[in-house]
Amino acid sequence: QVQLVESGGGLVQPGGSLRLSCAASGNIFIFSIDDPGWYRQAPGKERELVATITRYGRTNYADSVKGRFTISRDNAGKTMYLQMNSLKPEDTGVYYCKSGNWGKGTLVTVSS
Image (cartoon, rainbow, N blue to C red; front, side, top):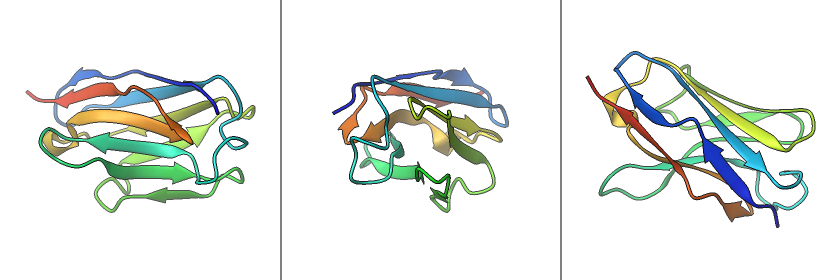
């Protein structure tokens, strides 16, 4: 299984943007039965799906982020990204990438 490390979180004002990265120790499409993706967990809430991507580039998004977030990966399949635009306070939470294993997460805080 791959080891995953997220980065790019931080504090941003509503309407702002962040780009999260997930660096993998191997190809994220080889070691995962499920499609790799990003998940998030808001304070006091359960972890939820944000977006997934297939090895062929097909993407899937939660309704709450459609049109604002974009998931992508590099050609080697070793880095996955989440571009987040038009951020809202309800996007606040710890963002995790998953490819078989889970990363440790990166905190995103959207606040003025």
